[in-house]
Image (tube, rainbow, N blue to C red):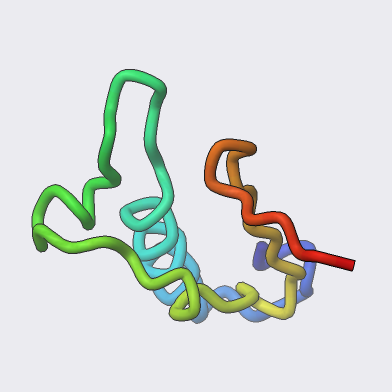
Length: 72
């Protein structure tokens, strides 16, 4: 992230903190039903809290079974 955006090295700690923040709220395997955040706090993650990191675009994957069809 830092190299791609040509940011100074003193932002390294902030980049690590941001990576951990995102991973704790998003990482799940097929065997796990909750993210580390959900396991610890006993509540779902609010995806509105996830923002672009260092100006990067953010995409949210919604599984087919959770998608809601919108009428046309």
